[in-house]
Image (cartoon, rainbow, N blue to C red; front, side, top):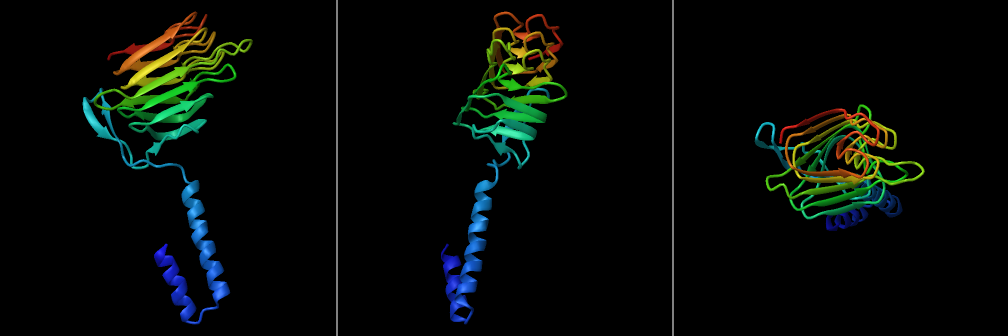
Length: 226
C-alpha cells in the first residue's frame, strides 16, 4: 500500500494529470483486490497417505482448501485443513473425479437435503478419500430422510439412485441413513463401486445396507482390503 501511494505522489510531482492518474490507479488497485477476494481458497500441496503404495505422497499445488460453503465439487483435489471444522447443511454433490484429503485434526460433516445423499456420488462420478499419517481427519455424512421423497445414501446415490465410484483410502468416515445405504445406493438404488483400502469406516442404515445397496437395491461391486 505504501508503494502504491508513493507511485501516485511521484506521478503527481512529475506533472501527470492528477485526476486521470489517480482514478486509473485506484481502479486498477481495487480491481486487483476484488479479483483476489473472488478467487477460490487455495491450499499449498498437501501430504496424504496412500495405503496402496504404503507411501506418503503430495497432492498438486492447486489443491483447494474447503470452506464449508461449497455445494458442488468438480474434478480436482480438495483438502479439509487440519484444525478445520466444516458443517454442510445441504447435499454436497461430486461432479467428475474428486480427490479429498481429510487432514489430521479436521472435522467435516454433511447432511443431505431434498431426499438426496449427504455426499452425492452417482453415475460416472467418483470420490476418493485420503487421510494423513495419524488418520484423525473425520468425515460424517448423513443422507436426508426426505419423506415422501425417500432417502439418499450417506455417501452415494440419491433417492432411487445408484452409487457411483467411492474409494476410501484413509481418515475416519462415518456414513448413515434410514432407507438409503450408509455408503452406496439410495433407497431402492444399487451400491455402485465401493473400494475400501484403509481408514476407519463406520457405515450403517436402518433398512438398507451399511455398505452396498439401499433398501431393495442391488449390492454393487464392493472390495474391502484395508
